[in-house]
Image (tube, rainbow, N blue to C red):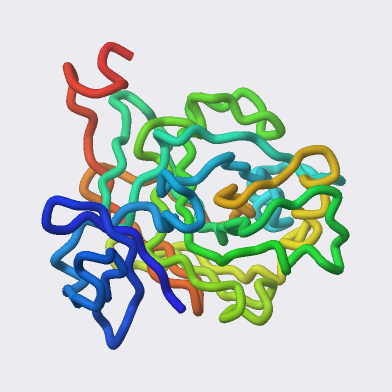
Length: 268
């Protein structure tokens, strides 16, 4: 099943995809269907999974595809290289991502995102996938100008507001038989610029859950971004970027220029 979280008619709603439409789950509108173009898309975390309807801890992987590590002239890591992202970086499908003034290189990263469904502590790899609620698509933009070390991305590289579109759907784990057999691709203004497959992850989903749960408790609504293959290019204001994963969905995002005097980046 494909699940979504949307804004419509002055309220926030959980919904599911039915026959190419969104069927609302909100009690007052139970069963009401609306078109995909009639709503504002939010990050797809249902109220049942997360009472606030948003991700809890957001964990992200760096250099988790050998070809991407090679693209950046770095040795592939021997253990997961992880960093934490802030809530304000997350936006929904068809949202706008701000490119700060003056930067020289800002690129997308198409990533399989894993949403945890139940508390996980010291989970073994063989059992790890049973703790997954579902999967979605993330676009983990990076602003390379601020990068000091690929092994330790700093906050300004990966935590800018609006720089992590996610969605449109949360696809139930039961509907994804093998998360390590999914093709990924990115287009910029309709041109294919990136393609890969989750089979090429250095650390697969089950390994990552085992790794993280060995030293921290993963909770429902926690999010793991699993890294990107090679093929990243610079994106400019006006560019329409679509990151897509087979069986999960196609996430559309548009780059916009920074507007001075408004928002959290004012005066930066």
